[in-house]
Length: 95
Image 1: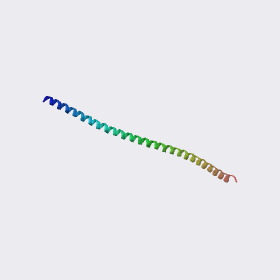
Image 2: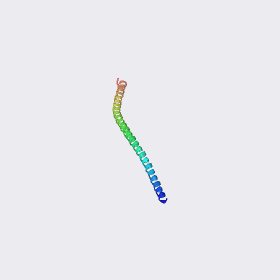
Image 3: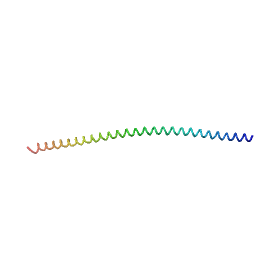
Image 4: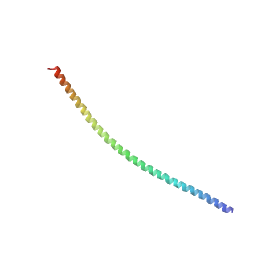
């Protein structure tokens, strides 16, 4: 019976090792799934960042255009104010 006990012990150890290997394979499969999910999320975030970057570039162009227009409006306003002041001065001080 010692031979049978030795064989049984050995088979039990082999079974435990196979169970541990099966658990390791399941853990590895779960880890791979998480890695694939993270990669998909990273791609999605990269696409979103690129879209936001394009929108920022468009807004920058619009801001530059609006700044140019606003600067022209300010210049015209000062010209009109200067002309009105000159007209009032001429009306009151030069008969």
